[in-house]
Length: 444
Image 1: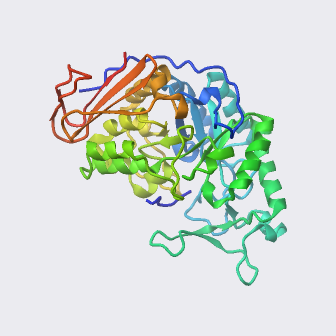
Image 2: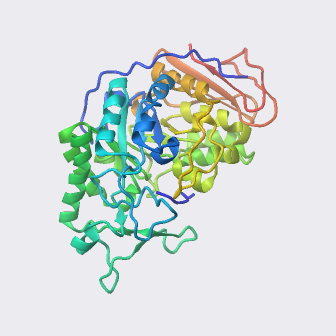
Image 3: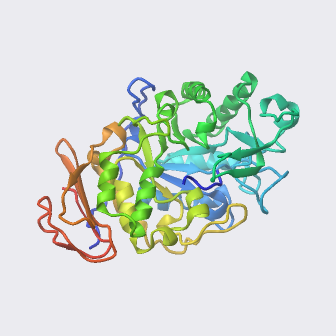
């Protein structure tokens, strides 16, 4: 959704990703996950801004490049038609859905969506679709045919969504209206719409917008029904433990992003990163996330870029070092489409604003990091990877850690400052001094 949320070079040998054959074990028991997700990463695609054409077909030309980079999961931001009534800007928000089972004509056709998924599958990608279950556009047909499917005010009228009401972070989503999940008929229609994209276009799962604003039991039922069609991968834009019990494989990990941003601005150092490792933040409800809960780790996403700042604003010269940490600490790394090209502008949310993909200064870095994750089980996601063992580098400006899984181990040392730093580390005796924002990764 479009909102403000709560807010030495690395010497790695590229390794071709070799994902295991897919099998499926049902949630919730120990929250096992599909085999192919265990060493996977995720890449967010904004179809409107990705190419000058802004179409599904035009994006397909980038698939070979992204596969060479090592991308596993393609997350498509919503591709459905956007509401006209109360539209924001010229083109409107992707998250103002006017028809759940159609394609925005600006992006192409349903056949184009099918072709994209089909070609992506042939190359080894999985593809998930952004799903907006909390609200629709004002001019969605349901607002006329099924008023009772919506939240109504005291006079029985549909009204715009207000997010974080009564707080300093209040937001008025004036272009959308909220659905009412007390309606069994709405629940049936929403699951049917999700199933449409699995049956008709062969999507592999969904990223679910503001998932915590929709009842968890709805997601539980939706997951079970969708899994009966095809085993799903489900990502929730939220951060609560109960979402992992039956419905979702992964939730957002904003907590690490917050620390990385402070480190890049000189407001935090290795001690703060160590504190994050020792005492991982709890959910809003005060619960600890189990190791089996995948958490998504990122330096940016579409909301973060548009409303908080581009990579240059947030990280400056520290960006590569922060990307290294996001990719090697526990969790599944997300790359916002365009970050490999050095995305140094805030993409307009309601207008056409093509990103510059004329060069790819960070592509080699991401290629190395994704290959490292594929090759080393110590870095795998959730319970399939190793815990973090903090190492004392003898310097609060140097963050060092090791992850070990059986005989496999990866050691990471990062200068988290803009000054050269001395390192005293028994685990890597050859590393004695790091340039500003430099890192060293040892992965035998």
